[in-house]
Image (cartoon, rainbow, N blue to C red; front, side):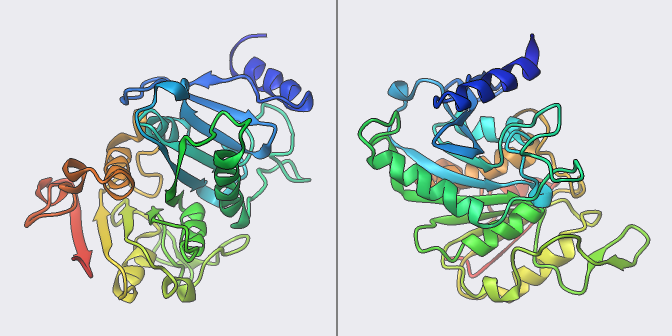
Length: 303
């Protein structure tokens, strides 16, 4: 057996035996650490991204809990972007096990990708904090329990909004997402009703207590209308809204998450690591990103 299929099968066998799965390195990352993707027997319905050698990490690992597009319960779908974050010294936990080539726990009874629930993002945080306290854990005392982000793409972005009320959260990243008001826009100018469950509503916006960043794909992004409504409605916390005209899929599947991934990483470095250099992307008159003609940027409730 070779390639990803072999890695997945080996990983499942290891899980069955009660051990962490075999690791897969993430290629084309830019951080100072080699990043790996793995499943762990103590959190079998999630996928973990982290620096390969935790002993070499400078400082402690902030936590990023991630919800997938479509709320699909497959944790390896955003490996390029999430591996990039991990390579910069973060512990990232995505909803769902590794994608598998055949029907598995990652699919429903019809063979379609199963949806995760919002609670999956909370479970990821609970697990990470428990591992930080567990003396036998490889993460023991290596995690920064006071620096936690929730993030998600599309449906996962709604999950992140819903979890944003958690008092442990430090920041929220909403990626190609926003509260759905009056249906989802379609290319023909109409609307369609969302399929499946809706993780968040307008009421959840009132519960946010941390800075929020919206990274949206421009006018062809079906989430733009929702994001615009959120920007107008959120009054109590700082909101950074940036549009790059790439559509609803964003650049998340490009190496290192592409241009959107670079901005998301800068937000995390600013919010969770206090990097003034990263903060300059969002601060200033004009801000760093504001000077990039490819992006349309606006801020609300800004300090």
